[in-house]
Figure 1 (cartoon, rainbow, N blue to C red):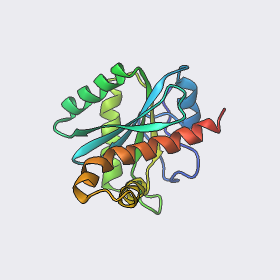
Figure 2 (cartoon, rainbow, N blue to C red):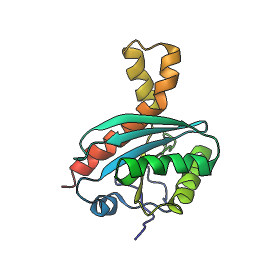
Figure 3 (spheres, rainbow, N blue to C red):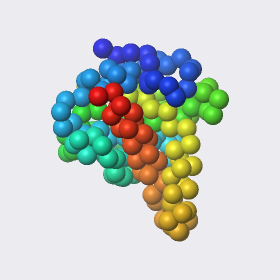
Length: 172
């Protein structure tokens, strides 16, 4: 059953709605050995990360250049089938004060449309500052500006997924 909650604190306290599960329900819906894909939904790209089968480590997977929702979703679901994915963790870009702006609304629309195409459970995860953290990591690694542009979205997705994995581990 879908819920209108996204996750427990420290998530934004703004009302949540849509086709996502609460963290505990999402965790319970996952089968053993099911991997997860983390998604950083941007206007130009979808950054993707992949968990291991034990759901302890997230790794960068791919960046999908956004074209049309049906094409983007087809590629995402192709990767989900290829990697035997059990659920999708979607970064929700809340403002620092917890409110939601146009980017969060766009992300919610993406999740609603995606939920119509797949039975996989969906989880919204607070992604505040994930892109900034990803950029800081790449700068510290002395990555060129051009290379950072290629890596930033999937690294942000990795941070989103890793923080969700860490929180889910505390549920067991």
